[in-house]
Length: 435
Image (tube, rainbow, N blue to C red; front, side):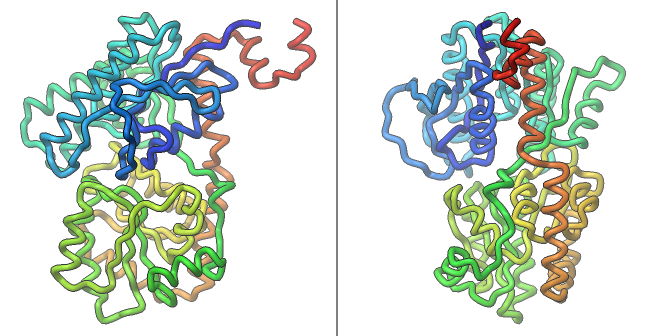
């Protein structure tokens, strides 16, 4: 039996961190650990305030057969650019050191976090360790930062874009989470050879998150605990970050203060949470509520507590990022109010599935009208709209579909012999074992 190919994942967020990327990468590595020898290099958990008391720079742990190298990083204030830079630079330095210490790595897998530098870790590692590199782009930067005017320094923008273009060009495979992002990649290389790339959608565990009625005991208890019984709930569940225009969208809630049955519920943490909380308090918006991230095992209930889910992106994000919360919403079979650009990946999913309505970013009056329209629908009609998303997900966007695509890419890039790949897929095949 040939040895398993070793893949080292340098991914910042990993179990038990609550970030969406952590949950995806934890499921991915868990499902691939029988196929490959896997090491994960990640920060100590802290995305949503998780506590850890280790004082060691590097700490080795195991999750089943997965080796996990934890990096201790300074705490980050997401509202402070200086704090963010300190965190990012520390991660970049220590992740490179941890990667260089790993022996026998066949493939380095990195993601586009932190922006640009996540890919650069793989580029550096590829040449110093003579490994292959798979670069998974969840967000194109600096284009994403430019969309929200995070910096107006054009020199920084040009350097960052040149570095990330280098990361893509030297990668053995670029992975993208949306078809619109593939167009952005091609746009970076107009007149040049486009790097080999594959589109693989993110996912949710569609077996864990299923459509549930509000009368389900856990959901009913959740609603009662937070004073949400008999309310029409417009929910945003996820990262309350810089790229979603939430500081302006919160103003929509003022239009519904005379309709006490409509409540806006924000679940999550992020850089703009305090700002939108302050706005709600200053304007005495009793129809706006905030909750922290819910435990992963409770997600199937909290998602189903909503009547409508907000899935939003800032203007200029098309082809740059894909809000992965759409997959959980579709799994729960809930209607979607998308505030998204035409032609973006999630707009396409909503259009093809019929699971909701889409308004252009910054069309706040349109958002008000969309909420009024969805609230006016017969409950059975609204329910049917959401369930269309569930059907579409089951037919096109299952977890197995995406993970099998990852497995095929890893086997191809790692150079897994055809016979061994067949064994990994079916280790009990008598024909293969005889050989």
